[in-house]
Length: 237
Image 1 (spheres, rainbow, N blue to C red):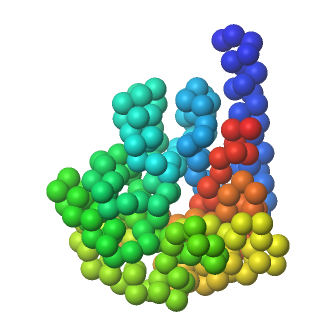
Image 2: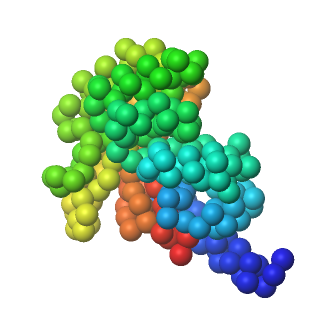
């Protein structure tokens, strides 16, 4: 292995260990929560290094076309069987079919309309699609998600669709929020998650996830109960 490649591998594995250790220290229960490697801006070679080292088992992308280009048709396709690929962006109905074909999980359901499209295409593909509901945790007009007080209603609709497997909630904290604002947003999401899911596995044998926290706030999220933070820039720095 060339020196430059070896140096990069060492740096990436050091980043991974640092994140893993910090998550473990912040965690509430036995063992460390998993984390989702957000690969959308990462170099293919960096992603390959971490997959081949056994560090990345869950990866997230937020654009269907970009994910297909990388994971189905491109450089990461040979490693695709080693990773559970999550869609974490805002999904339009005209991309639902491609999303069902490309991803293992869709984590950002925010309406019955998009849920019905995913369920329809999942049925056509002969699969049950694990999904999560995105909660809107800020008042930003650019932030997608369902209002927390409407989450139970949306979840009820998802549970009536036979080709969906609802597995938890995802949320994005207020941008530039104070520690107090972050704590309040995360605590509100955890209360909803505990009411509707709780930890452990569900009837499909899949984990129930509360996916809160990113590179800048994942420790606070894990302390609040997140068991699937989404981390990109810290991992691939």
